[in-house]
Length: 428
Ligand code: ASP
Image 1 (cartoon, rainbow, N blue to C red):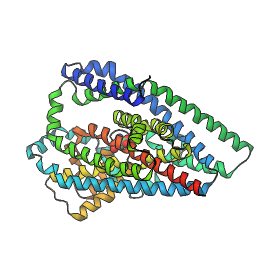
Image 2 (image 1 turned 135 degrees about the horizontal axis):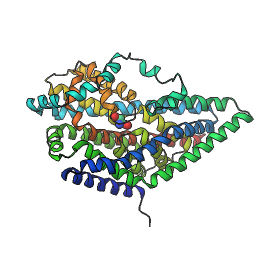
Image 3 (image 1 turned 45 degrees about the vertical axis):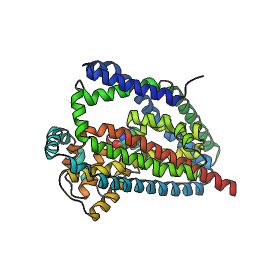
Image 4 (image 1 turned 30 degrees about the vertical axis):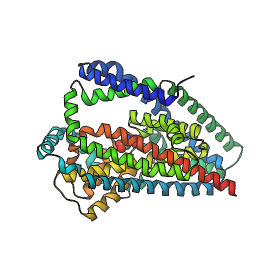
């Protein structure tokens, strides 16, 4: 019997981690960088390569098959409302855990000073981006949804939300203008969608190897040839890291498991096994966008989400529903404030809830995007953005875990919306 895909990926991940640690401990960092990591990059490139065509083709096909625009607006309204709600819950969980455990208060001042000194250059390197984010008005994310030029939107994976917008608009107009020509367009796009889905199948055949190389490469990038440095970083930021991961776990248990258990026909085991390949890939790539082709496939094939629902709910979720990121941004802000000895009152904590919601919506589904948008949250409560130096060292690990959470959240909502639509259709 052929081993299930998620086991294959998990084995790749475990072996990759062992290999990464072995190579860092034995000074083989540059070998891993030159000869192993590129296979991981190749695998991610393949996924990114098909993400845009897949999102466009499957979304247009999905919307066009609805044949009823009111259904789309109903589904859209509900999806967005649930996405906002789950994100607010995740931030609340984050705020609670960070206030209960107060990881920043137990960071010795000399470690704070050390971390700030060692990451000062990295923060300076990001200053340009930080400035740009600071200068954006509050409604800029809304303006950014509509691209000025669709070719350039297609050209950058971080612009996925713009492509989602265009695909929705295009799909709706395809429904509104039925004639022989538009029917031909629809059938061509349906064909493109079928082909890209086949591409996902083929790419996933090499997923275990890709994940092996990605994890080995990540460990090498973090630890280099010096495991002790990585370990000492982990020991000083271990408590903070654990608090973020605990918050993420609680969110998965309290929010997603409850959604799946009480509002869908799936058992938790069925849901988590069905979505496992996407979670593992999200963990390995730190990119919801690169994972999207696999999330779509898992939702449709393993969890029976209809294509018209999955192709709408999941790309939208990947771009606006980043619960893991929002939780992380809330915890990180309070942690930095604690470490810098700046108490945050209730108003400040409520401000964090609002700004983390907006910041997470504006975060692109790509690696390390969350820490850049964190600046918005920090600034909103007067914590200096240079404080990100304190947490940069462990950001990669947290990025992996929060991305897996982000993807799980999108899938849970996709299953929920799918069942709501099915019930509605059965009823009437
Ligand atoms: N890497 C995350 C994602 O792709 C975004 C983040 O940096 O938080 O979902």
